[in-house]
Length: 88
Image (cartoon, rainbow, N blue to C red; front, side, top):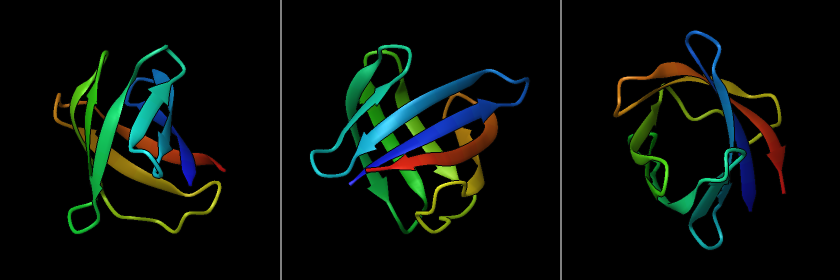
């Protein structure tokens, strides 16, 4: 399953990332690519990519439904909203 998430940071900067749960890869609309793991117990995604290395922790784990929104904070201190925009 692939989940595409739009991350909108406080201040309005937005980036869209596609997480491929089958092979553990992630890519974004800025050309970044890498790998990820997700810990459902902590709602945390750990990403190792060419343009981001760190974690993203979600306030909760909404159901995988298009339009689902949850607040997030990353390990670089950026906060915002994560919106599920596509499921494939």
